[in-house]
Image (cartoon, rainbow, N blue to C red; front, side, top):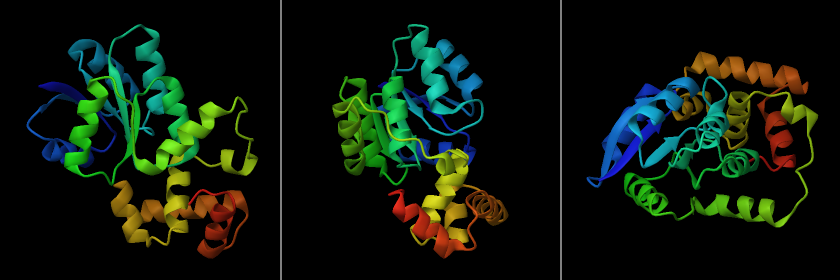
Length: 210
């Protein structure tokens, strides 16, 4: 049995992952933020950590820094709603062995966990190119001050808006309320000095965030 720890700040999502994993996977614990993740990894010593990228306390990269920096022998598989290049590259450079998005099936996730536990690198098909491009070039990606002004959650909402998702669909995808989605959209519009979701879509498309 492969021992797995699920690290994600949404309880409902953690429960869903538990239900979807195959019989060869044993979920030995859960954590909802950076501090609880670091503590649980040290105490439970899982084979694989399913790691969300964005969560309270510094996100997945902070977990990687603290755990791997201490010399722990554990493998990480990032599991996130985000498919942004900067997120993928950030956690892979931090030491994760793979990165898959949350639309993955239970069977595919089980297989990804098994492969990571065996030492393979695993990526959702579209994301592998980001990693190859990043490590093939020594140049850092250009800084975009406007994009950097947005929080990680605002970026997630922005990408889904640009893909044509309705507010209710975004709320369901990100496990947040419709009111919270509206708050994030208003904040993004204000920060980028845009007027409506159509302008947001054009802005995101121009930066290849979709």
